[in-house]
Structures are given as structure tokens and as C-alpha cells.
Image (cartoon, rainbow over all chains, first blue to last red; front, side, top):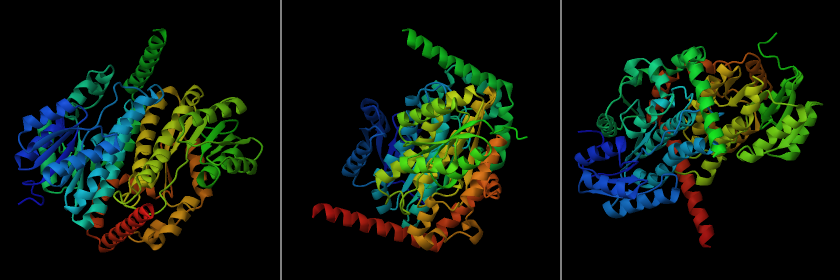
Length: 288
Length: 290
């Protein structure tokens, strides 16, 4: 029997209308859990819940709104009688590759607000129930938590922060019989990742990184990894799994990789290009 | 001669009225730099600038306020003709140890805003000058970027974000001839740390070997920053041995985190702290209903 049996449990997943969130909700439901599918878009949340089946409800909620998260939890508790498991998964990637100098300040802070404060609001709203029922929390970080954030710093910054939240949370929950996992995904074939690779400048990454690193897994595979992690109350969930080894070696590898990238002319070119592109966009915005 | 000579440069340091920020500003001034002493308290900023000497000005600024930070940069540029070095150092800690569940929402978010968004807003405001003058940025992270943030989550969450920001910033600045450092301090004998030990007493020390809780002076921490700026170092650790802990973090952290989970003293402390938070919560509710 798994350490945490999902059968009969109640789960809430944010950003669950699509991608990894949807797949995790769907697969938890297959294990016998009731699920609250929370998403920004009411219609998409409802449709996703319908596709998952009975014992699934769609709830429209913006994770950056603490009150909306409390309402989502209250609605779930009212409908299913409690809440055992919360997965703070909703997140967004920056809409364009840009440097900290050239990015719009609002755009940069919006990513932090959704990816980090959104996790905080979700966790806070769920904690009383999860603690009481000795449940489990999954915070979705990313391998971006330890990758260099150049040209997408808001994303890497937010994910590094989420990782620290998840670790502290686990230590604070264990004495009450509850637990928490930090989930780290590499490239998963979600709409977010597809859009990221459609951005100008994204090609550089594909040229520089080794091919095995760029291979994408399916959202279903990522969801399966999360479900397994929950059942094991695992501290860390890596998908693809080999990222676990890079994470273990991060303290040694990162200084070397950072140094190498400082000297890589292709990266220097990509950074100059991003700065020029943003300058061009600003000029054309000013002209119109 | 150092790689980056501070003589004749202009530096802006946030949170510089006291502690590591003050010492960094003072020692950069000794090397011949002009310094803007930025602090939330106008009077303290002015006094600190006076103590530092002739090429120092005090500026009152809340780093969480975007516009205020931009004004501080503009004022510095106006007074000294430019800006070469920025040290985004201002930071706060929560008043007492608390769990993610027990801490007040406003307090958690305020610590995050000052410690993380304050660094971002400072960096943003300074970048045009720094790039133009091929200068240097120091972001003040902490060993809490990789030490488990139990009872101290907003601080650890923010400092981990700051580390990531600083690494990306360096990568983005190097092709333009500028650079950035991430500074990691252990326990430094600052007001922030003294307050933490005073409020939380023995709890701060438990689960820590003695050598881990030994404090260095703010002057030593400031000297480490100045040396790091002169070397345009990617990472500044003070005390220095934290460098090795950082290098091994990917291996050590899972082991330490696991040990925490089975540690009886940690379990008891978590329960006590949550019980205290519940009492305070109940007391607050009682006060409101009365």
C-alpha cells in the first residue's frame, strides 16, 4: 500500500485546465480521489472537470488573489467534505526572452506574482485542512530553480523561491503527520513550453544545450511522476528523472556552467540580440 | 591593482545606515569612492553619511517603492555625476520564528517584498547607469538561499530568489562589460541577527553545531563585499567556509532535510511555535470581539 493512498481523498490542483495540472488531476481521479480543478478561466476549468469525470468540479480562481484561493478551498470542502491534498501548480513563463534591463517591470513582477505569490496564497489557503487531515502539499518548482536564469530571470527567480518554500513547508508539516513535495520538471510538452520555444531567440538555447536535455516529456508522464511522488510522500519529484543527478551536483556544476556561459560568444550574441529586440519594440511602441 | 578600482567611482548601497551595508559603504569610501547611503530612515541615513565622510550623502528610501528607488538613483547621479556600483543590501526578517501556517500574511509578504522585490527594484533602477559605465552590482543573498528555511520561510524564499536573480544578472551583464556578484552571509553580528537571537533565544541555536552559530563582525562582512567588488567575483561568502557548504548543497540538503524530519527537538519546536501562533491568533480574535 502506498504511504498516502489517494482513494477517497480530496485534491485541489491549480492551473489544472491543461498540461501537467490537468494530467495530475486526471490521474489522481483515476486513483479514486475527488478533484477540484482550479483555473483562471471558468469555462476551461468546468470543461476540464467534465472530461475528468464525476467527483470533479471546476472552480475559476486567480492564484494571485488570496481571497479567491480561500474561496476555492471553501468550495472544495463544502462539495467534498474536506481537503487532503493541494497542488500549487499554476504558473506562467515570461512572454518574451529579455534581459533584466530590457524587460518591462510589470511583466517581470507579474511572473513573480503568479509563480511565487500564487503558490504562497494557494498553500496558505489549503494548510489548515491539509494539516488537520494529515494530507500532502505539492509545490511546483522546476529545474529552473537551479538553472541560470539569463533571458528569463523572472521565471528562474520565482522557481528558486518556490523550492525554498516547499522545503521549509515539509519540515514544518512532518511533526503533524502531513508532508510536502517540491516538483521539478524539465521540458514538458505543455502549451507554456510550446509558446516559449516559439519566441524569437529561443533557438539559441536549442543550439547550445545538449540534445538529451532539450527532449520533452509528455504532460501525462509528468502527471504520473507527481502522483507517484504524492503516494510516496516524496520530498522531491523530478521528471525527467535524471535531473535528480544534476540537482545533486548543482553546487559544484553551477559555478562552472555559469563561468562557461560568461565566455560563450553565442550567449553574448543572444543577450545583445534580446536587448536590441526590446529596444526595437519600445521604439515601435513609442512611434505608434 | 585590483581588477576593478573603486577610487573615483560612485557607489549606492541600500540598507546602509547600519550593519553590513554601512560597513560596505564606509570601506568603499576609504578606497576613494563616493557613496550614497540609502536607508528607510532619513535621519539615520544622514547620520551614517556624516560618519563616513565628505563624499557621502544620505538618502531616505523604502526599497519596496519603485519610484523612490529610481529617485535615489537620480539623486546620486545628480550629486556625483553617475553611478558605477550598486549594492542591493537592504533586508528585513520576520519578528519571531513562525511557520508558513502560523505567520501573519502581511508579515510574510512584507519580508518577501523588501528582501526580494526590493532587490529587483534597486537593480532595475540602477542598471542603465551600471551598463553605461561598465560597473558592478552586488545583490545580498544569504546562506538561507540554500539552508532550509524552517520557521524563516519568507526570508529563505526571498534570498533564494535573489541568488537566482544575481546569477542571471551576471550572465546578462558580462557581454556588456559590466558584472554582478551574489553575496552570501552566514551569521553576522548585525541588528537583524541580534534581534533574531534576542527574540527567539535558544531556539536559534538548537539543531546547529556551535561553529555554525559563530558570528563575524559587520566590518568583516563589508570587507568581503569590497574585495568581491574589486575582483568582480561571481560569489562572495562570509564566513568563507560557507563556500564549501554551497558547493555540496545538492548532496547535503536532502540529507539534512531528512534529518530534520526525524529530529525530536525539531518536532517539539515546530509544535511549540504553532501552539504559540494559535494562542496569539486566539488572543487577537478575542481582542477584536471584545
